[in-house]
Length: 193
Image (cartoon, rainbow, N blue to C red; front, top):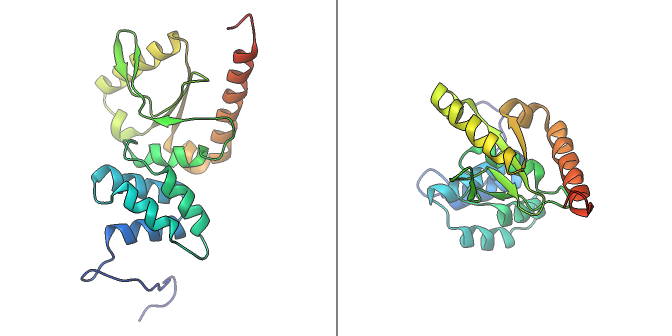
């Protein structure tokens, strides 16, 4: 009945829905990277899609969107703890000179922390800050301590909120790229090393 705003697509279904794997593949092909990587990461984190199965199925994709889908399927991970972390990671995937890894355990200030994204070579931490996980005074206080401990190491800690990731992605990419360049300069400096 309603045709305006409807994009009809054909797919094999199980009952009345597509399988989790088919759904993730469709998202990887059709949605923007910040959305589709969040879907893929969530499916892996929840265990409804096997990582090897996803990568193999993505390698068999053909047609529009398939090269991006294959790249995102290779990047998909069960480690990011929220869709915002996944979206932030998607924004930064193609920045050269970075090796940002999700949830790497670090010991700082006598405790183990797991930054959202971490480049060990550059000492760069990139955090995705959402109200859902940081919205009470106790969590806020713990986060302040964690960030301060990481800065004292010294690590470079960049924090981005939902608004930054969704409404100001180029600014986020520029900030991370500038932090990468600063890290590269420090690595090349005899006085700093």
